[in-house]
Structure formats: C-alpha cells, structure tokens
Length: 119
Image (cartoon, rainbow, N blue to C red; front, side, top):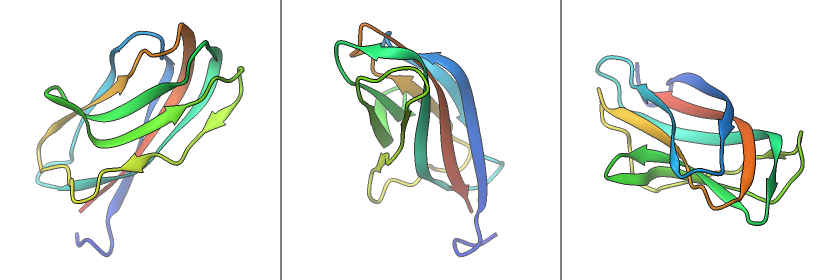
C-alpha cells in the first residue's frame, strides 16, 4: 500500500479518564506498516473541570511524539477535535503506540478516538 492510498484505522477508547496522567490505551501498527496520526477527537462523557486537559499520542519515553489534542473545560456531550500532529514524525512500522491523558483537569472522562493512516 502506498502513501497516496493509506489504510485508515480509527481506534476508540471509550469513557477514558482524563483527570489522571496515565495511558488510556495502546495500539500497534499493522505488520510492516508506517503511520501518521490524522486526528484525535473526543466526546466528553463526564465534565472536564477546573482546567483544560490534553490527550497525547506517542511513546513511553515521549508521550506527545505523534500528536496532542487540548480538551477544554466542558460539560458532558461536548466534542473536541483538531489535534496538532507533529511534523515529520511518522510512526515506525511494528511500533507500540500509547494514547495518554495529560491529567491536568480535576475531573473528566471522554470517548477518545484516534485516526491513523497506515501505509
């Protein structure tokens, strides 16, 4: 498969806690394929309070290596999208990727979706 015609996979992490700095999910590339984060979106399921928080896509040693989304203070059913992908940071083939919550808010949970193009 070529870069012009990638396989796009959406990874869903339902009701992920955003108020603790922790891994909310992990994924691995399809065998032998390199990838790039297209977008990260959230639908808030429990209100995000006191401070905005982040959802990051990266590695254990570099949590925001591939993308970051800021989730603003919001009530349930609010959405956020428009993740900032890191330029020139392709996900290497056969790499385990972590999706993290930044934990900056005091409460909050969301359905988190990560769209990645694999080629």
